[in-house]
Length: 352
Image 1 (spheres, rainbow, N blue to C red):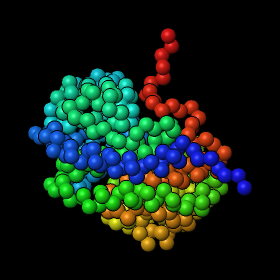
Image 2 (image 1 turned 60 degrees about the horizontal axis):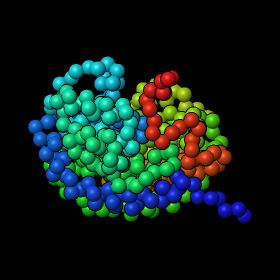
Image 3 (image 1 turned 45 degrees about the vertical axis):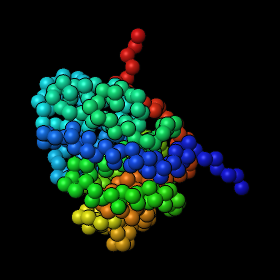
Image 4 (image 1 turned 30 degrees about the vertical axis):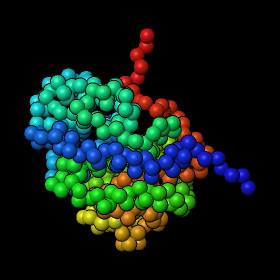
């Protein structure tokens, strides 16, 4: 029997528990500085693209549901193409980029400062332009990432979002005991058995992914990874957007991947969605959730034993394992998805 060589993606996924520990160790002591940058402000805006945008979605939900701070996503094109001049004197702008070198995000951060915002950069490269230009940098400690799909750098961004969300909460230390368990949960989920889910996804022609609330960013990141790494036609939806029309395309031959925390107010709606999709003929794969959620699925994959506030940090690991295994099953190289590079420019290069 031939042993399958480990991919760079799998190797970097295996480094995530340590990346989580190092990032927490580096960033938790910066909570007071985060609070100082937010002083006198009323809202937090996130600037990001791609996977970083999905991490920012988690950050926004955590700020609003846990810290009671208003959050929103910035459209970078408002800065880079429209050149709009907004009053951001009441805002803290958090720019998120794994490399810290995405020109559009660097330009957006500069624009935000010119508009009166305080700025925080979240990046995995300490000497990057984004970090050097920020009022405060939250440098994640994932280490160099070679595979094109962002795994350990994305998870480290989620950890940074958790530090940001707890720093601005009334009780910054309230989740510390659970944060201390995150790395162990990440390690446990790296061995998730996803074979049955791979079988479903290889035998169906179309897939949708959905989540809600704090798990929405995880759903969108799962869909993105399935598309870019496995070259499958996949759509990622928030629960609410999915219910408002797109659910009508679900029929026999559709695979649905649903992500849920084990607790919180969204477990019951996600379970109801699973039952609805099953009645429409979809084959259901679920990540996380509770016992009722698992009972509504064709394939139940493990999620983390973490509260909803931190569940996205663990749940994405199961998604990563699924994507890496599916790429192998399809005969693809997960390290180098077709047509993608590690640092992506929003605009194509101009001809010289």
